[in-house]
Amino acid sequence: MARIGRNSRKVNTQPQHARITAAVVTYAPEDSGYFKDRLKVIDLSLRSLVKNADLPLDLMVFDNASRSEVAEHLLALQEEGLIRYLVRSSVNVGLVGAYRFIANAAPGEIIAYANDDVFYFPGWLGPQVRVLEGLPDVGLVSGFYLRGTHPHSIELARSKGLDVRVVAAPDAWMEEFCRDADYANPEAYFKAQEWQGWTEREDYLASHGNVDAYVGGVCWQAVFRRDRLEQLLPTDNPKDHGIHSYDGYFHGEVTRRGFLRLSTKERLTRHIGNVITPEFVALAKESGIRTSIIRPGKPGRQWRTFRRLRRKIISILNS
Image 1: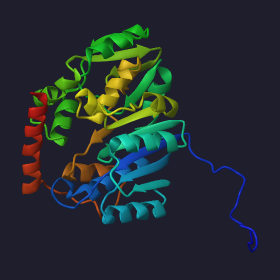
Image 2 (image 1 turned 135 degrees about the vertical axis):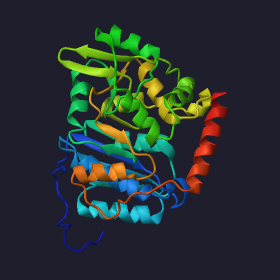
Image 3 (image 1 turned 90 degrees about the vertical axis):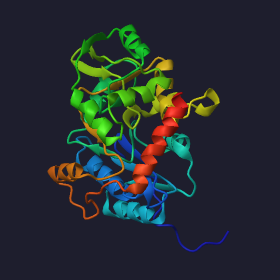
């Protein structure tokens, strides 16, 4: 086989990577309706993730066949140095495919996974890793505690030898999430989660040594050990079990296999939703995040129609 010269780019050393890989799945197939302001949301989320991390990390983004404008912006963020690993699928492989790819491809021994609509407060990562490594048999740790978990989670925590006691988490966290995620009130949220068996309404704090964590974790942002994530990811389709949410099915699988779903005592992340409100613009400025793409938005008629349709679908699924 003929060739000219040698490939000077060939190296025998492995590239250095951080111990932690932050992995975000992006999805914005259009620029109208629900996804009208998604690019702004994605930009703020990724910038706050990197800017406010208190531990070294590499950012991996898996784009699930978003529109070309989003893909071009993600490439620009990679060229800017914000994103280290950028993967773009030409088809939407769903969360199932994205989770599996991340679990197999992320080089870090710890994976900080999130959806693309999460805001990260300063120092968001360290406390999550501390809980992950400080308590036994932890499946995942979220940076936002949301009231309402499965009673089995409390029993499981006690079976691990943890000191579990009833506490009172701030009601403002629940109210804030419901506002950001468009639930009319906490009762509407609890009703929507009943199909998962998350019926426990009291807040429980689990302790071991000098490490404390709330029992329960959200599906939209969490930290995992990579080897455990590979072990816990379901390989079957949740719809085969009458479950419409892969996130919910996966998180249920964590506790079914005997691992804990926990959250930090501090509120370290926040669900943005699909609109950048003036409140999030202010939070961005407080963190020193400056980008012309972030401007306040407000829900339009299409978004209000979508919200009504979503409520109707949830009502049918839960009936």
